[in-house]
Image (cartoon, rainbow, N blue to C red; front, side, top):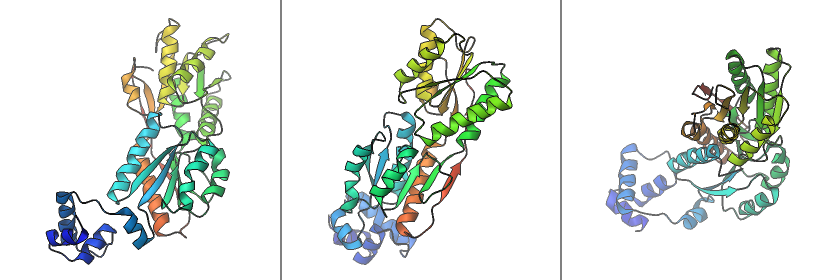
Length: 326
């Protein structure tokens, strides 16, 4: 169906339909509703290429995910996509794995103006290399909060969140609190480890143990927990920096014939559905994942509409969910 037929069906001008399709704020609410209803009723699909030629925009954004198998990343993407669709944008998804060569391949889309902007979830240490590849394209970093720089970002206060987890475990009488962390090239891993160590110092605890997972997978969490259990003095509590790692830790503890939480308490991080699906259900530091995704898109759209606007840094709230694992 053509734009002319949509106009006839809605009882408005072709120009009004065009303004609605291009998200113009000059359309009366009543006319906008008529056009949207006509579009929905006729299942109209706009010609994106033609629109790009008219407006110099593709109405597409590139989303580069560090690990799409991570439930937290998947929730972020859902939030980005929901907000994008509300603004008549579509997303192209790249599972970068924070690999610069894989990122380089996807970023070739920028040169051809195939996308209007980019949201990344890559390791903080990769940002200087990405900046060279991305250039002047509107860009937002999601779930990796930066204190400074030219890139807008959205995240949480990872230091304070981690301190809260450790303080909670200490308040429950746990004496040997271990950390299962991820790759320190990620800013969140650095900050969560800093919070862990700071709170132990405030609690006057000299005992600490950190095991690094090779990736954010169930098996990596299990292996990291097995390493902690093999030490001369095992922990009586474990704080894992993701729910997936915590689920793997639970498996290793059960396999060793130990009980959760009687022998070892376990907490996760992210607040994903997985935390409620394991046995026992996980206590977890819940991030507002979908809201973070929505906010990341809003920041990007602002950069697309106002290219010269300064970088914005949004720090969002979190909350701790207590369940049977602690």
